Length: 508
Image (tube, rainbow, N blue to C red; front, side):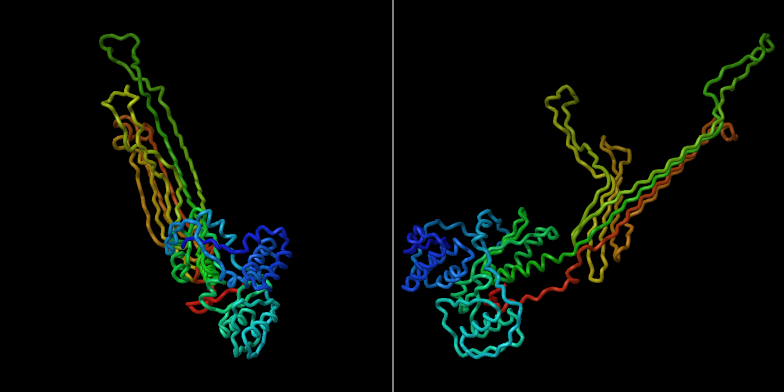
């Protein structure tokens, strides 16, 4: 529907009046009301309430005379109709205009009754019942200008609270209470027309907590809109908020329901610890023969008979023994916060660049101006862990674990390094404070070598013996901690909305 402009006869008089004091405006409004000029009186009451929001008399009178004042108004359209928006789509973006209108569409004030109880047994008309009831709780009362006083109504209350008394009175008399200020309330007949005219249309926003994902928030928005038949509900993931717009009786209960559903999402803190221990030892011992030797004549003056008598000198041979030993330990600690049913991931390691494609031009490296950058793909080397927690009502937690361990093998194919990949998948169920071994890996390499002359290397002391030993241990452990209990452990609040066709009018 296109927005309308109400043209009233007393607009210029109210705006151009030199008496802009709220008290003067109220006096003039009372004078117009006594002469029966309701439209002018309503305008002046409105202007006084705008200038002084604390003037409860002006705001109460403006609400009381609103229906009669609009009967003499001329309605005309002076703005083009905006583009129609599907009210069933909760994904409408919240605009800056929506946020600016929130001050104008603010919820009504909450009544502040006395903290007391009421016992009453009365048969009378509607005005008398509400006067006795609201006066007892310290609330001043106004009646709608078109209030037709219902008669012969009986009400029985015994040690009733304010909410209980208001509910019984509304059911008995067929009326509803509209708050004007914390201490002033207006009683109106509960008809569809009066609901549309007197019940305030409000717009509120709710923060969208980080404990809920965007798809879940959208599903909640659709469900709430269908249950309460809301005029509009919007979810803005950029601003992180939800907007609800409709009559106050619907918006109030929709807000209560949403707060319950948004606030009780189970949260888990995951303590992840990664241990790595490497031990390496090397032992070498033996007799190292020289790598070169010279012939030494055994006879200084050789004859034909002694020719060829020579010896081999090995005086540079070495007898040695050496040993090395190294031990390294690594510990990685990480904490991940996750929600019930949503996966959390952690990576311990490096991102290694791998060239997957290059461009060449006939092997001519001089054509540098036409060369393109190679395509590079990054691989996560080390440990990649994915954990999906599921909370149970007895304090236990199930963890779905998926772990990948990737390392370089040292080999390559077409200059592309080969990566070894080990994967573990499993499910474990734990109690509070228990640790789970997500993955464990033990590697052990031993090598033995002997170097010496052929045939002599088996003789002790005439060879070099080497022993190399490497041991590696890797352990990944996870401990979950519940930081927010699941909804099954939270008592939910009963929300009494009244009949489906006509929700209760909330007072506070």
